[in-house]
Image (cartoon, rainbow, N blue to C red):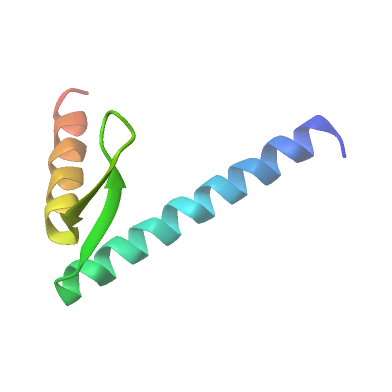
Length: 67
């Protein structure tokens, strides 16, 4: 497989994973469920999906306002 095709394939896979995670996060937040993520040391922690969604939205807003 040529390198450009591989790059496009990996970009599609990465985009699909991001969309899947986004969907899962929204669904769990709507149901009031938790998510298991890793802290800065790689240790698993349990966080509410609503909190994760709020953090992500806040950081997205920060990025937009810095442009």
